[in-house]
Amino acid sequence: MTTTRFAPSPTGYIHVGNLRTALMNYLIARKAGGTFILRIDDTDPERSKEEYVDAIKQDMEWLGLHWDRIERQSDRLDRYAEAADKLREMGRFYEAFETPTELDLKRKKQLNMGKPPVYDRAALNLSDAEKEALRAERGNGVWRFKLDHERIEWNDGILGDISIDAASVSDPVLIRGDGQVLYTIASVVDDTEMGVTDVVRGSDHVTNTATQIQIIEALGGTCPRFAHHSLLTGPQGEALSKRLGTLALRDLREQGVQPMALLSLMARLGSSDPVELRSDMAELIEGFDVNRFGAAPTKFDVQDLFPLTAKHLQSLPLADVADAVAEAGVPAELAEPFWAMARENITTLGDLKGWWELCRDGAEPLIADEDRDFIAEAVALLPEGPFDGETWGTWTKAVKEATGRKGKSLFMPLRKALTGMERGPEMATLLPLLQVIRARG
Ligand code: GLU
Image 1 (cartoon, rainbow, N blue to C red):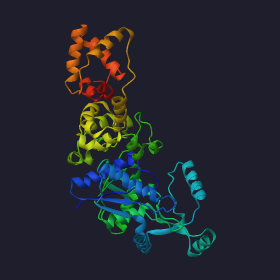
Image 2 (image 1 turned 90 degrees about the vertical axis):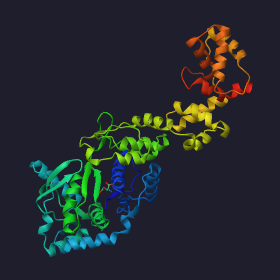
Image 3 (image 1 turned 135 degrees about the vertical axis):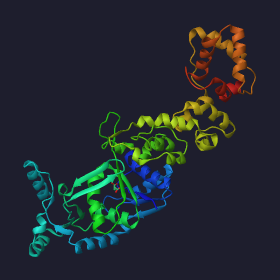
Image 4 (image 1 turned 180 degrees about the vertical axis):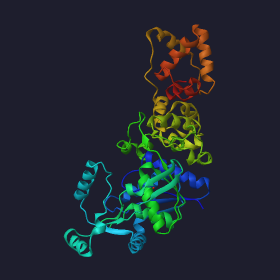
């Protein structure tokens, strides 16, 4: 059965880059009728925070990315210790004692000699007595996985055929000196034991994948299918990594971005399919194919989310936005006509408040000197209330007859006097909502 997972580390809020990973894994699972696991990669006790675990869940729920199972790596440390023992017994695990400074020096020397900065495996030559002495002096060493120096190959769902020479990669550290298990092994143990069949993640993980394939094989597991999506860049192709902090999902939510807008964009951006607003998750699932994504960096412009949000809101019936309409202060009996007027004129639900204030308090009228008499005449002709959808038509017809004005010179001064703006909602739908005028009518 198809099983995928989204595996964030709870060391911060999740952002649009993480969302891309989450969404692709989610859509693969749902399309196949499989299982989607939310896995919290919290093996780092210093950087992992409960607050972020809660925030990740909230963000996922907001988007409707419901998980079938939740797992936490901190609950599974004994499983990782077992796997480590297994690797130790197999002779694939060795303790190394170099300090970060020593490693840095080695790297610099290698680079100076034009060699790739790969760990030289000096620790493999240490005798038991030497290790004992180093342990006494420096404390426990780190544990490195001994890669087989052969080519590691896989067919990547996005990148195509990949072949990496294991000799060009340092033996990965899987356990730190303080005993902390690192993601590289924890993830392998989880993916294997949880039956993960498909792993989609960012292309910054390609080298991890190479080493993880060897670890999976050493532990006797089955390799999942891997796909590595490109990383997001800003609209000009500039690196986004530093700005991702400002593109947290909660900030976008705060700015009024609608989940469907975000999902519609992220499920297609960087693929050969056009970005179009979809009406629901089922539609996104239906058309999703990870193989249609390209390897090139994907440009992301946060501004693209707003027209999609506006379009999505326009499509909604009042029932879907009733809370927001009420929160904007609109009385229940006016909610229906208010929404009919406002839906075409907002970018986010946050704009509702402004429209309601205009309806309730009126606007500072915008009246040109040459229009003063005309407006006075028009006001005198305003029919008796209550106003409805016909009122504007009846009224402007009467004003036209009385003043001889027509077209733009008839409508624009009225619009400006009533709304203080040159552009805006259909006056026929707006007029019955203008409370001040209503009172007068
Ligand atoms: N915790 C890892 C990350 O956030 C997970 C990577 C993976 O999907 O394997 O980068």
